Length: 466
Image 1 (tube, helix red, strand yellow):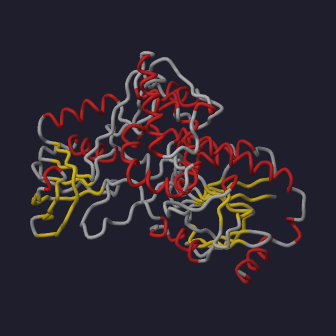
Image 2 (cartoon, rainbow, N blue to C red):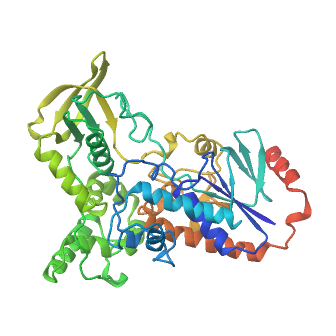
Image 3 (cartoon, one colour):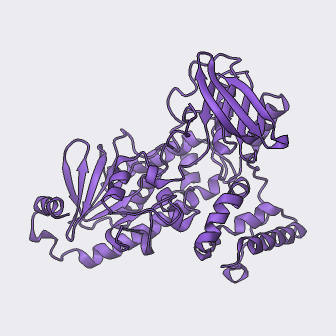
């Protein structure tokens, strides 16, 4: 029997576990999803209850299974939903969809849900030992780290609420002024949540450049781009020049710049990997914000709602930085240095909400397991510190520079290696590839001397000698 542990029960964890379970159905394999939640699937990304929080990808591209693009639309139709392949459904609905995939996989005995938390892990020659929060110890043959999006550490020196924390918007007066740090898709979600709750006070969004995500437009004729047309290894200036020329070419054909961004999707990971470390750093410093607003776009109906908030004067987007933020009896007193004219703006807010996006330093991870793995050298940060160092076929790389034969990771933890790997259309491909790799290993190893010693003894031996 081979035992595979998927650590994390959000969308990434459930999608990879379901793929593994499907691929290895009927084999002597036990696939565990270890997560303390009562229901696996929604995770942090899709647990919102606000119907105004829509996906920023159309239904046609959000099937959980890359080889079954009709899976999501079929599920929606069975539920009586009126969605089309071009619709943008709510994140809550998508959370229900992923939860259903988890329930179906459990019912089919493709996976098992272990309601616990992994707090430590040691890798030995014959097994990986997992220590759980309950005090139990579990031995497994392979591990897939699929912890997904993490809650960010607090912004240094700024008393801010996290956007998805229960109660983060509770207790606000109707006219209370709100400051949102960040101007991306999470800011948009929070502004619309405030509107839905009946909030009528001013909302100020501050970010370094004051950029708001663009919106999707009706689908045009599908286009493709051959790898031979992409200038892999070109410097950032050259890539920008080439991308602008590509957008102009599509505009002549009746499309717009969105088509140029979309046809790059199959090539973005290779583009990223072809960059030098310094080019990657330059991209993160200077170009990332511009890429994000073009790549991660709003649904058209969300754009309309945001435009209404801005036209009414209730939502103001400010390019600048927070100089000081002090909590007072009245709320939070903030000084903002605006980029336009370098003016110092002073204002009191009832609440500050941190919508600055994903955590950008894996060494500061709030996850005790990730901290433990880093501390013991089981994994190491990538060269940019934005995720874990990942080698070929998603194997994590330890402090000694060697890829692990037993521990894999995918999704947001692999950003440093893959960059575009946080959205479902990308994650589902990673899930397929991980399932294929594990299936190949399973087929080659089952029947070999796994049973030479009881797994309990293997686990004890791992902890004793590592």
